[in-house]
Image (cartoon, rainbow, N blue to C red; front, side, top):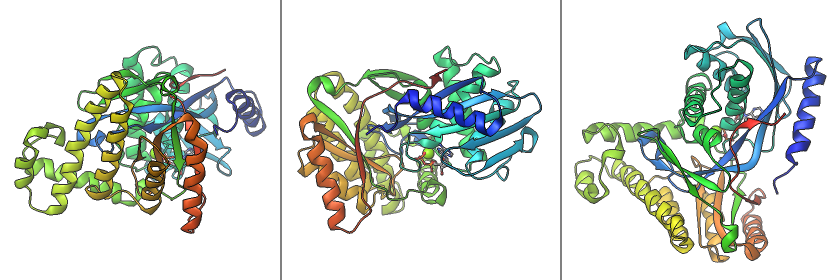
Length: 394
Ligand code: ADP
Ligand code: MG
């Protein structure tokens, strides 16, 4: 299930723009959602992560304005939101419009000459499912802004990384969600049939071939429908715990802790809870390196083992899993998955599993049955392939 076809959404978002704003948009840009294969809660610790771009995308039909006004509407929300660029702040426009307005605010603060926009959004990325609809929205708008204001930032990896950094600021400062940089880098930099190995300390990245089809496997994504809420303080609390632990250990970020010296480092920390948080981060960064090596040598069994280990660490040490994620991953494993883990910030959201192509429907059905037996909201499962980055569609 990838939902509506891209061409269909490009057409309908253009028509919705025309209905709402009275003329045709200058163009349509889109950016993908993502799943992170492994490396969770590592981005804000200067660590490594390994996202792929999804075929599901957020589309933005956009025209520029020359009066400093931003107007925006979304097929997923009611009404038209309007704000002057000068008035954009954490309070204004608030709500979903903050993700769009924040991008213009951040580009402007970077000294780039942007003006107002009319924006009509439509998306095939489920909202709030841990698949990063927020970054897809920001990055579609950033891509449109780059083209419409002749910023020319889409042509090079450096330019795209700069746009990603502005989108992170939009989300952190204006939308008020203290997320790391993975989602926006994925949406702007991931290639087709590849995962992006992102080094959140250096900002560097490289493509790692990711094509399960060739080996007869698929990546099954299950949106558990359990509400995740990054803005609600749990995510911020984890982030603060890591920053405090890094200070106690005398390092800039937990990336500096050598896995070989982990036990010694843990002994210097005051509480069992903080020790477990640090152990997750340090071992998870190491698992990313191992997963990249396993992918490069075609060892999917090892990748699966690392998925399972990552999930256990997130559940037991980092404590960001939940009943739905534990049930979905356990059911996928008993259905024959090579490995399964929660993906994204946690407390709900989605799980990913590597399953034989011929088993995908049966595993999805088993997860649905397990949820029904527990009286949980019906989950939504679909297979995905690694897709391309933010781009102009029309
Ligand atoms: P995720 O990024 O995992 O989907 P977030 O909580 O980070 O979840 O972001 C979801 C929020 O992003 C929504 O509540 C909404 O404010 C905004 N958003 C994302 N996509 C759209 C869209 N297509 N139209 C309007 N708002 C959107
Ligand atoms: Mg998000």
